[in-house]
Image (cartoon, rainbow, N blue to C red; front, side):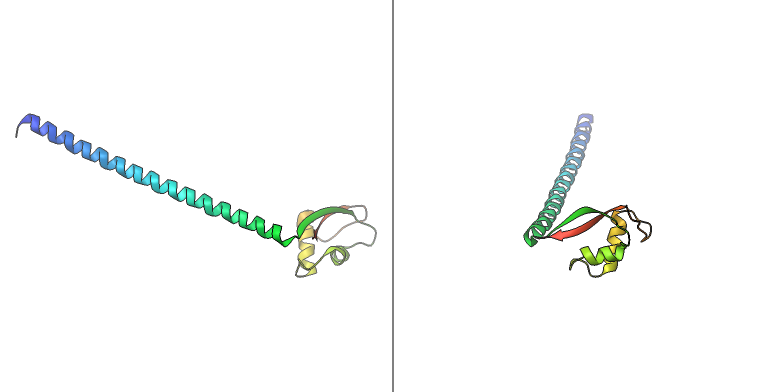
Amino acid sequence: MRRQDKISERRIHSNRLKRRQERRRNVLLFVTTVWLVLSLTFTCSGFLSNAKEQEMSGEHKYYTSILIREGDTLWSIARTYMDHHYSCEEDYIRELCSINSLADEEIRAGMYLVIPYFNP
């Protein structure tokens, strides 16, 4: 085989390898793009779906601040403001403690508490 033929064969082989690598890179880019588009589509549709469900129910969660008076307890506040959205008073009190960063159930007259409530 002539020297020129060997050089030509190497060049052809090198070009084949480069094209193969480029095809792999393009396929990987295509698959990644499709995966990203599908992920974003499903994520956005999930958010839109949840937003529609809340909007359709007509009930919205609101928050207000109340002044704690002498004799008030978290239990009395729960009995006053809790509704069917909570399964029990303990759940409502747990949310009150979380919202207001209360370490325990102790509240004092003169404090302000943020409380959740629902209004159709």
